[in-house]
Length: 160
Image (cartoon, rainbow, N blue to C red):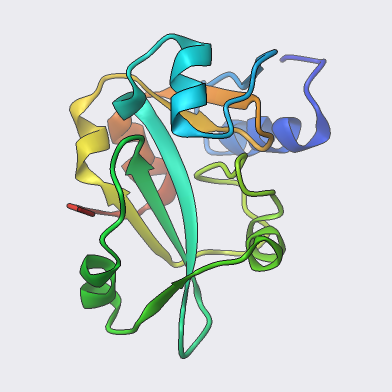
């Protein structure tokens, strides 16, 4: 176990271990806050970066987690058609309240609250290896694209 992880990164490592996943959280010296920064810091294609994006439903204020491939932009109308409700981008306070993490370091698992509405960009499943945020703007972990489905129980869709 990596003893030198920050508290947030260690909580993600613990969440991974709890699910029986043998992923290792690493904290890099450079920022992984954006998909492009992460790809440069890791040395991978930007499409292999998992962006964890939090939205909320407009009427019921439920959190929605979208795991998107680095270069892809979320077509909110596609997500709305799945959930039957309009979406709005969650602000920093709502995001931290629901996930326990700040924007730029949100992992796909280990959130403070249970998120029932999770959608996974089908483009992430094209890769044997993807990288996801691990609790801080410079912490990441590597996993198989297909493991995202297993760990989150999310719905795989085309988000664009």
